[in-house]
Image (tube, rainbow, N blue to C red; front, top):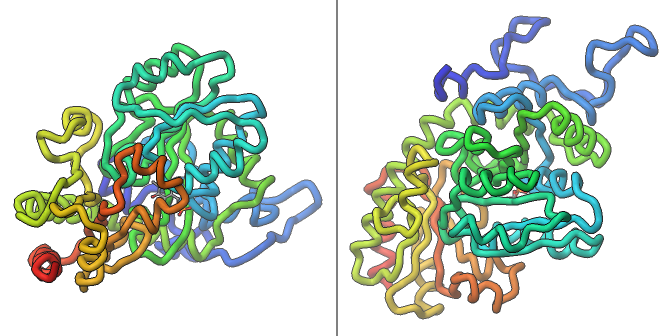
Length: 381
Ligand SMILES: *Cc1c(COP(=O)(O)O)cnc(C)c1O
């Protein structure tokens, strides 16, 4: 089955009690059993809920995976993956990571004795010197946030497999429409469902997709034991959002490309970070592992002055100044003070994340209006 058909049909079956074409919102905390040891697969809603089950099947199908497990946020999903580890274990990850993941790793898990190595993963071989018998997890995020760097998933997997290291990929920026890490050999795909999968800026949710049954059981055990599960109303909203994922992504990609090109040719713009440019340092890998280049991009102003960047962000009207991404509406973000404020300044600058960097999540509005908005804002600086 092709992607668009799966987006509409996978996981969703007519409701057995009424034939309702959409999975109902099973707003219940518990289920009545026939006898103490006998139930219909549902005992208590932290463990399982039919609306959530439909969504888990849908997301798994979109990632070409066998099992989906949903969490109450993207961070809840990431947290579950780290909980597979033990004190003394080591993780290798990139130095250009979602700020919340960096915070979870350094502030919550380093404290209990898990060691994280943050490195430049432009070259997969740079993992090798850090590998030892304690290395248990390689955590990849590609395209990266906010610098749109691309990591070669297959090359990393090839090295990790030789050393029995599990590979997890945060696939939030690409969405399953653009990239399927399990097909490239990864063991776990993580999504902040809050972003493209939900797509309408009205839900916080996370998900993991895996192929291995034991891994699914371990993660579902963590989800039920630790309790970061999403509710049925949110599950319904995401099931609804996913039905247009392919249509939205098509437009996100088209609009993203047009804005990247517009900015690149503008005299007041400095550098534009977008993996679709043929001179982007990882363009070939992006072309190899992604179907298109998405609607996320970052840029700096030619005069790299923070005051100008702030004026520009105040000038735009259609682009809303807000954290988050992947919704139908266009957003503008200042990583240094917003999404990435939890990363110490020296770390940020060292990794190329300057004070004047501006990130766009290009929505699905009409492109002429988006470009006019940017043009007006640029005139005002
Ligand atoms: C938003 C985001 C997360 C965290 O997800 P939440 O749903 O906000 O908890 C993780 N990774 C990336 C790349 C994100 O953009």
